[in-house]
Length: 274
Image (cartoon, rainbow, N blue to C red; front, top):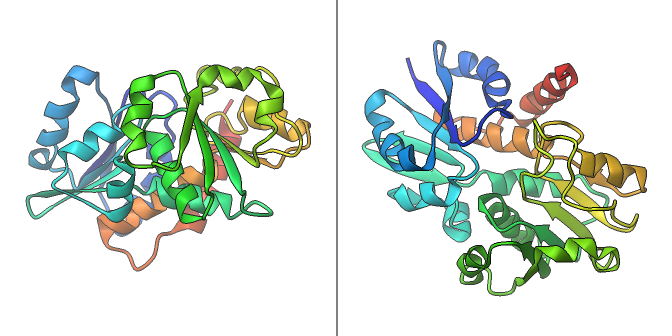
């Protein structure tokens, strides 16, 4: 029996076990997918112990994506470029880290009517690193990150020298927000159980496309308000399904990730949410 899991804190919002379980049983009957809600002081010890406990791999979410990257023996190109890991494969005594968030963001952005020329990114944590890598891949060369934490900005400047940084308070300036083609929320604001919140005090102008990496609830308040204003907007559900499908491809060495299957299941799961 193989064991997989999700490491993060907190994990009350996660749909990953329900999303992945049917596919896990198809590829490796008897596989378990566990939620590992770890406080910061326990993360490194538990992470390094997983291979000895029978784990084949794991997903990593807020707030441990950068910490996981530092503990891996090897990183794929997306994880190396972003300095963040959201998928880990334990094999042959090695811990290999991947960033499948990049594929998830890229796939989501390709669903919009056009690729933006500029982007305003809210937050500078592990999710933002995957977003910035995907934007770079798609040729979005004018990007600004808004952050409350100067130390987080310092950690990104070396990896993404072309990116500009400004204080998070600029979200209050609707005219400033309106100068960007795309707004990406990489903060947990609006995530279950605080789904009534939005990182913006007002909805963005209709000219701005919106991508919220939060997927529970779906749609988020930010996405609902953006759509009501005429914005092209998407929450993180498609990103979730895509990155999860790429995780399955890595763990079970599949010829291609089952994105369509997981996307349809993600839609069904969210329709059941209260």
